[in-house]
Image (tube, rainbow, N blue to C red):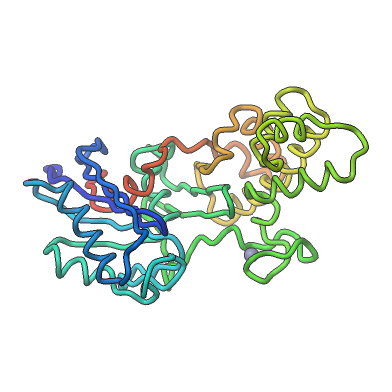
Length: 319
Ligand SMILES: [Zn+2]
């Protein structure tokens, strides 16, 4: 079968900027454009700005399609943004049909975590995998599912809100209104909270406090990893707790989807072997025996342009 040779475009839509890139079929970035959204007064202006970035990168190339990654809730089947993006008159906007009308090119709209999942699957740490789950541990927990080689979206295209699976019914209050969601224990925000609670309860001094004070900022996940690397006892105890909670969520994922690979994105993905090795060990302990050794846990490979790359890859002929 002849491989598609047209270029593809990805748009990463955010509350502060629109970043757009054109890729070849092998994932090489051919052109990139970025515009700030501050000052845009209406959805019409936002759409015109998106179109401008696309026209800028497109030049004279023939384009197979435009993928758009958006934060928040997205109805991918109907190409509608439901909510979660801080842009004027944006909730309920039929972005897919608006862009198709303006551009005369096929457009697909997906949630940013799904875009990242697909990007990692096609071009990143999930290359060669059959079933892969992508989990980003940042402010919250985002995730995307690629099952048997296909991006799995579910009935309303909301599949993969794994951060809101409950691991402790009596636990901390989550932004979603429930208690004990996984993201209240394993996100970057949660790591910082657990560390700060440990510091408040401990009589001993911790390198976490010293490192944060040197930067003039509160203790964050980064300081936990740094201090743990320096042999700080409290940081290591915090890290052990975080690895336990993270492993609980990953074991739930393995039992639910039987993936051959879980890719971890977000700030925590840079934590290195000191995090990934004990995390794999803990997760293996928590899954049933037949699952042991079936699933790799890897840090994400794609960096800041993961949204652009993943959205564009929706139109890549990847097999
Ligand atoms: Zn929740």
